[in-house]
Image 1 (cartoon, rainbow, N blue to C red):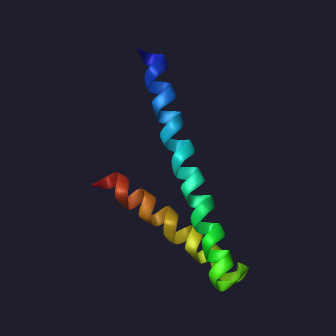
Image 2: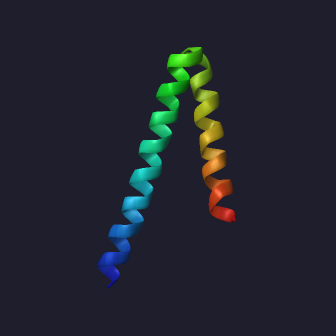
Amino acid sequence: MALLAVVIVLGVIFYKFVLLVFLDTIAALLVGAGTSYFMYALAVLMWFDGDRK
């Protein structure tokens, strides 16, 4: 049972990490590498804000 919980948590973390990389790539393509770091920070803030609700 504990193993299942660990797998689920790792899966969620991996999914969110992939989502952040995806958003960073989109931002880099749209506006250039300089602003992609801003988008990355924004995505992280949205991630933590989403977990608080």
